[in-house]
Length: 122
Length: 117
Image (cartoon, rainbow over the protein chains, first blue to last red):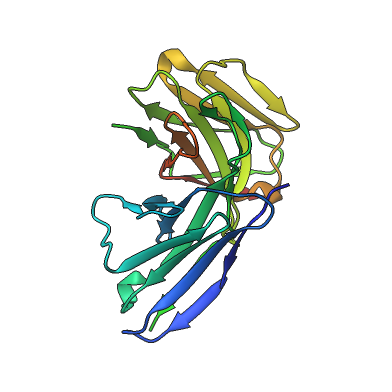
């Protein structure tokens, strides 16, 4: 089945540094990917919708200058946490949908999630 | 606005007991998708089921079954004869109408299921 891979799985960084997380669709193309954040013992909250070749759409309350999203190709989206601080420590998960599976205008393709990336900012 | 509510934060059962996880949703859309995911301690999301709003048939997959009641906006999940390996956090989620490549998910708060031997 289709696989979405995230890298790195774990990252520890010092406060003030920037961290880049990659989300790749391994055997399918995705013009749209989604980035979620999950704090411990909490639900997944959508941060932004990543669109290939255009600017990401951020959810209310998410700082676009802090969480930079780049979707440069149909198989890769990156999330960069700039000037990370301890409060940014979280589990970041991406998802992607296969663009090839469509039924008319309604995309019935499966939605696949990456394994997640756990960020710890010291 | 769309919303998913999982009122049960934590459930603890003894192995072989049946357990039902509740999910209630709100949406103004007439067409939507509902999902259940399992999140074990390792963190990855394991897809369990997707149901579109036009299909109210209940579904059974092994020990898992789902009851979709559009009249009460509920999509409950039952595990029969629970096992220790079922211990995880379970999320119910709602997706807007999916056109082209869209379809962001709205997740419930999650229910942490603990199955004790």
